[in-house]
Image 1 (tube, rainbow, N blue to C red):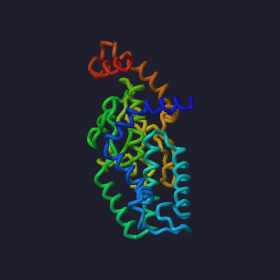
Image 2 (tube, rainbow, N blue to C red):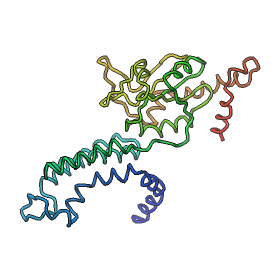
Image 3 (cartoon, one colour):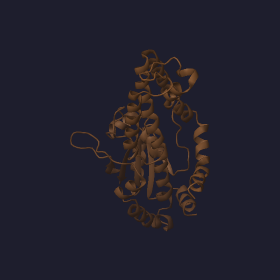
Image 4 (tube, rainbow, N blue to C red):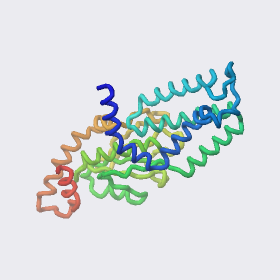
Length: 294
C-alpha cells in the first residue's frame, strides 16, 4: 500500500505535469534552480571548482554550502505554509532556489555569479509564466468600460479583481477566481477583472498600487449599486495593505458569497419572468445559468 498510493498519485497528476513540461517557463526555471547542484555534482564540470572541504573533493558540498542549502529549505517551508495552489508552491521553490544559486555561484567565483545573474535576468525578460486559460464566467474591463458597466444596472452586484499579469500572486489566484465565477455567477451577481498593470489610470481611480513591492495585487472589490462596499486586502490608516490570504474559502466567507448568490437569484427571478421589463435582462444570462446548473 505504501508503494501503490504514491504511484496512483503520480499517475493522477501526470496530465498536469505534462502540461507544465509543455510550457518552456517551467523546465527552464527548474534548470536554473538546479544549476549549482548540476555544476557541483557532475564530474566533468566540478573538477576545476574550488572547495573548502578537508579532503579537497571538488565534487561534493562543503560545510558552508550545506548551511546555505539548509537555510534555503527552511525559508521555502515557511513560505509554502501560506501557499494555496501547486503553482504557488513551485513558484516559491524556483524563486528561492535561484537566490541561493546566485549566492553560491558568487561565493565560488564572481564571474560565475555574474554569468548566472545575467541568465536569470534574460530569463525573466523573455520567458513569462503561462496565464490561466481555463473556463470562467468573467467579464474583462478596460479603462473606459469598467465605470460604464458598474453604473449600467445598479441592481447587479459585481465582484471585480484588479490584477496585473506580471504578478505571481495574481497568476496563482486566477484559477480560484475563475472557479468562483463558475459556481456563483448569475444575472444579479457577476464577476469582472481589470488589468491595472495595463490601465494605470484605473489603478489611480480605485487606489490600487501597482508598485513591484506592493501587497495590493490582487485586490478584490465588491460593488453594489455601483458603489464600493468592501475590498480585500484592506488598507490601514498608513496606506499599507493588511496581509490577507486569497483562498477560495476566505473569499466565500469574507464576501458572503452564498448569501449574495441567494439574494441575487431571488432578485433576478422577477426580471426574468415579469413582462414589464424584458429589455433589462441580458440575453446571455439565462443561458449562462442553465449551463452552470446543468
